[in-house]
Length: 255
Ligand SMILES: [Zn+2]
Image 1 (tube, rainbow, N blue to C red):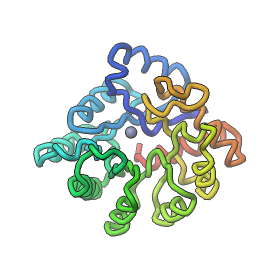
Image 2: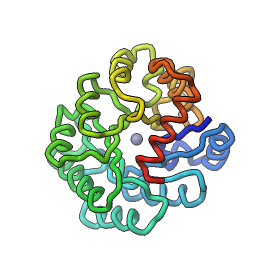
Image 3: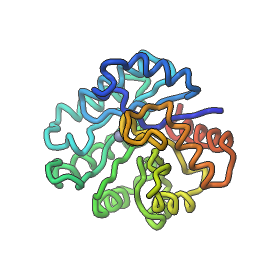
């Protein structure tokens, strides 16, 4: 069995008291690889440090839409420098648009930050990890305008119709523990239309803990619950689902 948690935030302050013990437990639980994802310059630097200290962890560097407001040229240069000089960096992320909270960065700042990093990912030949929360179609519009295909839509929460559009554009789609929730009907409908070779699994830990751990701190060892549920929906064995999503991630991140 091979599990690849393609989206985790081990740099999160929630792990400050026991990070090394958590990582040890993830490794012992049978998870083969973790993609540790940054959300601003500081957390991206932390992500690189975590990946460099652990063979089985890779990382992504980028500026999340929630940090878009304060991001300046120096920050984008630092992200680029990390991507160019650190061999464990395998993607730009997470980047995107989030209009869910009113106090998030202004819309024009978010779109500019997103577009700039999409261009950076293309220039560096790296895949992009995309966050889309209530973007009212802006993420999809920008991806189309820029003809982006080397990207994953992380923590997918859209409709089956949107999933089909993304698949046709060539994107990967990744699901969290949300698929295990009782009210996950929309995610399940989307899952059904996505070909197995376009699927990846993730925890988005420490958030989004799957059932039966919903509401608690999440970590990569729980990615198996996401795999179990997706295997059930797609009508394949757990081992087969793990193998396919693992190979998808290895190919997508060019590992
Ligand atoms: Zn995330």
